[in-house]
Length: 364
Image (cartoon, rainbow, N blue to C red):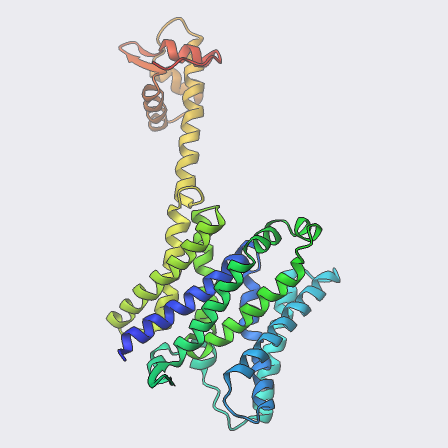
């Protein structure tokens, strides 16, 4: 099977499975918890490895990771409820402790196990074509089987409990009053995050799974306020990051997983700058237009108190503006039809006079 196809499809499956869950993590303001779960599952994996006698078994590892993820969430929430520490501090306490416990268990009881940093943190998606499993006489990439199954599982969960997830995300109190059990949904979501994280470890590593869980949904959050559209955009950003990231990695001879995460970050940066409503530059331009709008109204109101055209130097002295800003304000007022420039200076139009007196001018 074509190696490029295996790698690209693997990345797309990981990004899609992650985006479905990550959207709700971002909306619930639990992005950091995904990083905690992605690292804290290590003791669960080690425990599953020990219980199976050191045999390679994906299902026990997934179950162990899920249990460790739920333990992480439970400990974080318990510490938060005590009121002694805030939520972010609780996360910072729990996940390093559990991750360290897993590393300690490996160093003490599994010294002969090769704990590759590529597998645990960075991942090496380039190895995905070599890990296959026979299915119906065909050698199918193991990453397709694992991540494809997890994608379908996550998709089924979101479709089946979409209304409940939506209500519990935006109004947990109302969801509880209606009997939707937001607590159960919360732990089910965290369990799926745990399973998805460990399922992607071998293919892409913890760093990229965290990037795919958070960055595409965070990017989509800047672009829309509609949940279905946000989920679709998050899936799209994940696919784009996978395709473009792989192409750039081949072109630059760089880390494939690292380049995919970088492209996802660039997508977020573009949305952060240029999103129509929430983009930094968009808001800056909107504030600039609003400032000019207010200044133009002030200028017209000032001119309306004079029975003659006001020279520009007099207007500059009155408001303390610099000539460049006055020119921008003047252009704005002329564009709105509130001001006319004559030889003697600046003079309000009938529409400008109506605006200065608080009256609306009929169109046409």
